[in-house]
Length: 265
Image 1: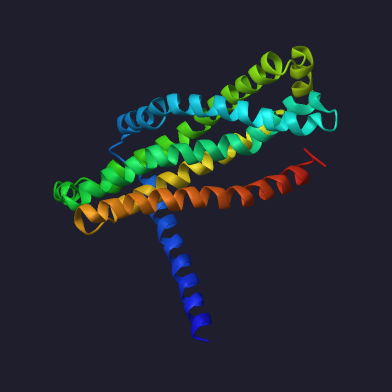
Image 2 (image 1 turned 135 degrees about the vertical axis):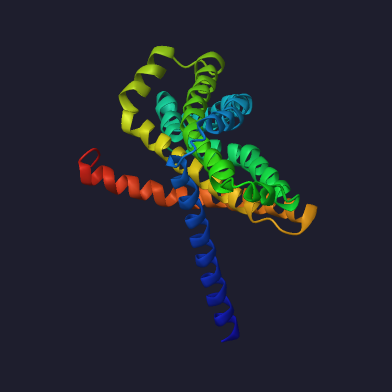
């Protein structure tokens, strides 16, 4: 009985904590449209979240495409279906691996930095100083980071998709010797616009998720330098686990919507 009560208590606390994070994100984002406008801050954070992530996204996506294509090739070779390697990899990348891996990489790189920066400002009382000066800290520090992450994530995912398929093309046509014309034709016949849109929409949601979670952890940091480390760790871990869990539910919701709209059967 004590075990059951403990589990119920933990579930209640988790739900309450999720509610606090969602409310925090909503209150911050809505301030984007209030004066004074912070568009310069949004652009500055887009450069940090987006431009500075291009290198690591490009590198990881190429090798993801190479590795995934090779494993799919080995499997399809057993059933004499190697011409399906291209479309299989393309669907896997655009619908699942692209947005998920991009979300995990960017949340670890940019999300962790957000939590650490905001946590440092909190324990150093810089946020208190902004409050005394009459600056809305959520509008100035939080909202631009969330908007920047939401805008940059689909762009980074599109880059991941393209470079991963470039890696797949290298392996399939240059290393294992598949026909290049067949490779592209099979992809053209299989991959549709709604497959790509599905991944881009997921990445948009993931961008909002990790930015809200990490900024929330940083904004509510306590306990000095140790607290900053704990807030950063919590922000990154919760973001990464949340992305994987939410991806499953988004996949099913999008599938249901596509069926209801007649896009797929």
